[in-house]
Image 1 (spheres, rainbow, N blue to C red):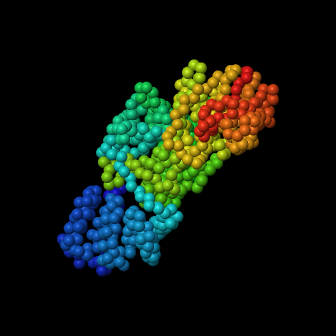
Image 2 (cartoon, helix red, strand yellow):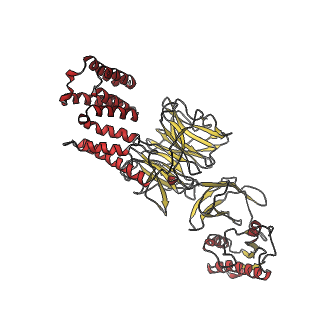
Image 3 (cartoon, helix red, strand yellow):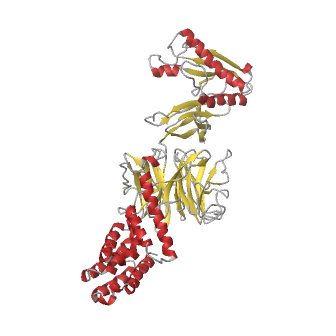
Length: 636
């Protein structure tokens, strides 16, 4: 294709020779002309640097050899060496600006290639001023004008404020003389997996973060790599699942299907096709798994979409199967192609590539944030992350600012390499921390498969719901900036609750919480961490509803269960007042449960004031622990 473009470019120059009287070919130095013809043949063979050298020799013989200047500019353009191309276009323009006017279209593209959108817009307007342009030229020029104007408007609306786009090559541990692309990593940033293509064969490689650097990448162990092509993968945040694209696999449903592999003690398991709910006769690719492993985003060319490739999502059902795919709708999908989705660990921010939304030309990277059950209008990530070229996939670490992508920048080890850079603040997802641990039986210490939920206290919306593995291990993400209720449930056990007040400040480290669940039996008790009152008052705050409903559900699932709700305070204030306050608070919980339909005979309440502290009242931290509401089993 490049050879064809060069031929067209140089043929255009030769045609212009005959069309412009002031550049009579007969007046060109014959030796210079011979070198020009020689350079043309060299370019046809794809030897662009050698062709440029030959053309420069021609210019030495004919310093005003405009066609040679334009041809050098065109060859640099084909190599994406935009600044060099601009230099030679401007030398051509200096020779004869009127004659140069026909070349303002490619000149403008090169200007846009280095971010000079104002100059690019002026150049394209000069081109459009040419009378009687044909329809193809008008279409191409108007498209470019639209992209340049978009770039100018975007820069005005999104000032960089000192931000510098400085991608760093990930180095020899990750990159090689071969092609590396499609990065993905676990939430703890300790395992990095990508696709490498060696002599046309695509396989998965992995690297681990140890002692402040990435280890030398090795093929993934186990049975996931084969003599087929495996690529475009996503690893679950806990590092246990790998979902990827396999093309032309035996027994597939179409050209490219989605497959899943599981981490085992022997490495990655033999891949399994994800079935005909997800895969079709069309092309399915580029999966991205939500942090709770309940939503699978991917691109597909199936019938019924809005354009070429569209983005879809499937939801994992209670029985472990996946739902039918849902198109993400017209806010996300266009008549163009939407590919390479990446759902961040905050489970709220989706990054993807689109050729249909307005941008800088080709395919750009966008983000969209969840809005209720839909999505807000996508936001272009802007220049210089997006350029006039086609952009690829992008993943963002849990910190919300460290990005990884593949590119063929001038410091690649060979072909495309993997790079990392820092995102601008206005296009970052929420910084995300996580909780991990094990759920186990308090009496036997045996791990318990359980349901783990994370709920936004301000909206009561469940943001994440994960199922532990067979031995009770779990990992759940915590986007910073909200206050959360954290609940763990299993039939036959009292639920566990915790709260994470992250709306005002972020904690310094991740949480590691092993959770002992108590069997439902007499005298078993739990502290209700998500029951809230205003200071000195006993009215239940709205964010208490989540916890209250958990108690209600516990009572419904265990119809003979009888419980006592007890209230406790710190030692600030008069003992009598504390006793009354704690009693009223416990009573408020009982009243709520009765209003929901729980028989009053199954409920008792009692206030203990400050008589049963669990921590030292000498500190605010201790007093906060003493101000609590407890649930105790009376009988079952």
